[in-house]
Length: 308
Image 1 (cartoon, one colour):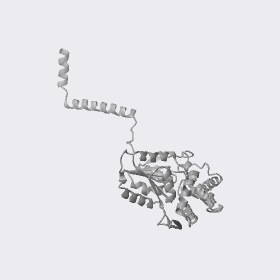
Image 2: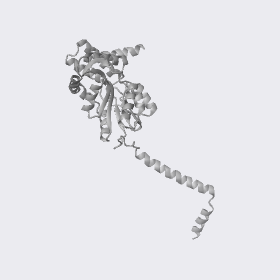
Image 3: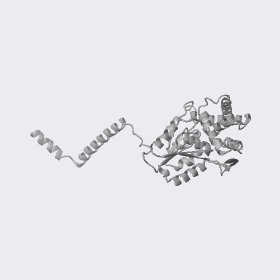
Image 4: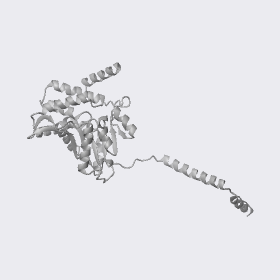
């Protein structure tokens, strides 16, 4: 009892400062134990896409985001096989495709040349004919070039009950075929003029590229009644920053150097599904399968850089 009386006496004699010190120490110990526990279990990102959120949708760029290379160039290969144009035109397509795969960026001059070539090639042909051929070309050249990782992202949105759209500068007919074959909702693409179902060789407006993509997405979102702040967009190119900036969930997929830098500055999520050389050269996709043309292009790029 004497000992207990001593302890009681000490408790009663505690000063306000010592009580404060004791409480502070206990709080620090509690927080420390909580911090240690949280380090044992890695923080998890919230589930995305949100299941059942019908006010959300996803918008995917096509070239080098969903599919390796450029759809228009693959389409050109298929048309050449069907005698739509001559060998010299094929060589031009091959050069542009090799540049695109090696440099990992869209060269505006190359893309404009490709579009002009495609328009001249299809002039006078029926839209229905090109749609049918597009189905065959998809199986021949495009199906094996779909990035599985990006395909899985699109499927996650579909599984969550959301609409998924391709948004591309490629002709809308090609984009529609690809979207259908992947089970997506639909596609926004460049519209070639046709009269009575026959191509005139002209465009309606301009190619769906850069800011035009953002405007198309904005218009489609308004028509579909979706909330862009709850939507996601995916692209590999800095040209699509306007589109990516529209949505609440922007993703840089296989990004070129400019987009990678911007994405990191904005704290956007990045995904890179390329395998070869990406650690050594960010922005340079694998060149396997391009062949001698690609080898020559690589050498030209290297020589150009050394001379700068």
